Structure formats: structure tokens, C-alpha cells
Length: 417
Image (cartoon, rainbow, N blue to C red; front, side, top):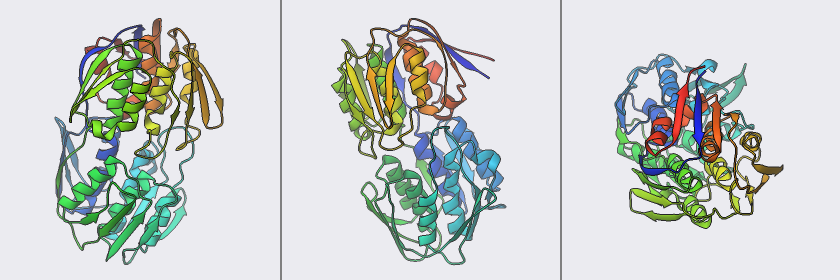
């Protein structure tokens, strides 16, 4: 099992190009099931999650090929309605095939999802959404079993603005009879990216980017081509890396308009941030200031940036409070950051980070995608050698991360075993 060795401290400087967004790409891959034809996506990152979703599609009888960032998917024939446990357990987003299979064929059998190791994330919102569109739902031996002789539009009011549930309902509604209204819908840019692709395929959608989305279902939709938006979480991670190392980094192929909450916190902790439509420069000179952070649903501060910003605040001047509102137990990175000498205390969904003058390199273990990147950031500024184990978590969400960091001046290498 590969690991990363990082020798610090270092100061990052230079340019880095952001890849396509994993959280936008996976719903788009699932959306191709609706079309019954060949779809093409470009700016696709070559990630473990990309390859997993390709395998899920191939298990359904849908061939998919990725070359030089271009992903071709031919959904003309579907030979199975079942997404098996062996694949779905490794990536929660596999559940996205539920909505389009149900919409196109009136039948879907999808293993209960797995993925990151922290905390339960129930599927009840997906259930309620599919049932509102006429499906009969049950759990059968660890599988979600869905049937619908007739898919009809309906009103779905989400208890929380879940991205996953919004995706599945949006996909299922595209081939339902009549209008579907999703209230308290997720507002993330990745939802608007999916809605844009579906509009290109002929679906009438209004309100994406707001809390109320309206979908006029069609009897069929056309194959589509689409460019995946840049990954705002990857961009935020490299921005945090520039801040923690006191560096000067220019982030290319990003969308600062999707990152206001992250930019605000970077500036609050002392970074100088300048943006254009597609670039962002972060200069991190001077002592890092302490800052309080509360995660929330978009456009609030993203839970997917919580761990990275905690790493930054580990060497800030003073104490910072981080309140995790989205996933209250998303703190598996805390024990690992303490191995660097960080001072972090937990009380339920609140972490208090008391900055220390320096971190020390240590062997640490990645537990999920974003926790992994937080450990890399800590390793960049820690004195001596850091070894990050289980980097397959990192590879689920970051494309070519070691070479991108190396190009910025980091001393990082991959080692086998």
C-alpha cells in the first residue's frame, strides 16, 4: 500500500492548474443513463472515484472509456439494474445511479452505500424523493430495491439541502410525467452544473442555484456533451497550502465565484487574495491569525474544507473555534493532527484549535479524502519527515497531487509498501 513521504518545512511558490470537480463529474456520469445514447464529458479528472463509477456503469452494461481527460459513455444498452456491494461500498456517490435507473426502466437495485469512514449519512432523503415520484422502496438484504410502474412528477421537501438527494431527485424527475418541485434543494455549483447538462439534453429545469428547483419531465432526453467545472475544493486546498506555508501561489482554471466563503476565511487569517474570473493568487506572508469557522450548506463555508483549514489554524496565533454543522462527527483528522504536536480539543461538534509555534513530522494515517489533504498540509510545514499512510483516500479526490505539490516546491515522494 503506497504512502507519501514529506520533508518539511517548505514554502510553496508557483502555479497550479485545478482539475475537473469530482462532485460535479459523478452526477454527470450517472445522468448519462437517462439518455440511451453516447455522451462525452471533458475536463474529467482521473481519480479512483472516476474509475469506480466507470466500473459501476460497466456492471450495468454501459461501456465507458477515459483518455486525456475525455470520458466517453455509451448508455444505449443497459443489461443490469443492480449496482453491487463490492463497488458501492467504496464510494457513496454510486447511489446516484438509483434515480436514473428508476426513471428510465422503472427498476433499480443499488447496494447501501459506503465510502468515507466517518459518521452515518442516511439514505432516507433519497427514499422519500423516489417515493414522491411514484416509486415503491424497500431495503432487501443490504440493497435498496426500487420499483415504479409509472414515474410521475411530485413535490419533494427535503429536511436538509442534501446534495446527494437533490441529484437523485433531479435525475429521476427528468423522465417523470409532469412537473417535479424540489423544495430546500441543494444550491451548490455542482447542482447547477448537472442542471445545465440536463438542459442541453432537452430537460426543462428552473431554479437551480436556489432552494426551489422545478423540473418538467420528458418522455426521453438526448445524449449530451459537457465540460466538467473546476474543483472548488481542490482549489481551496491549494489555497490553504499557500497560506500555511507562507507561500505565493497562483491557482489556475478555478472559479473564485464558487469560493467566497473560503476566500473570506483565508483573508481573515492573514492571506492576501486576488482573483480574476478563472484564477486566484494567494500570498501567505506574516503570522497566521486565528479565526472562527462554522461549516454549512452552500454558500456557507464548505464541510469539505474544514479539515484543511484546521491544519492551517494549528500554527495560528491564538485559539480558533471550528463548528461542524453538516457532519457533526467529521473530525477523524484530529487525532492525526495531534501526532504533529497540534493542540486540538473536541466537544461534540466543536473543535477548539490552539495554535502552536511549530509542528513536528510524524507518521500519520489518512481516514478520508479531505482529512488526507489536511495531513499533507501539516506535513508541508512540520519539521522533519512525515509519512502519510493509506493515500488511496487522497487519490479518490485529488488528481496527481504529489506532482502538483512538487511543482510548487514541496519535497514529497510516493513510496511503495
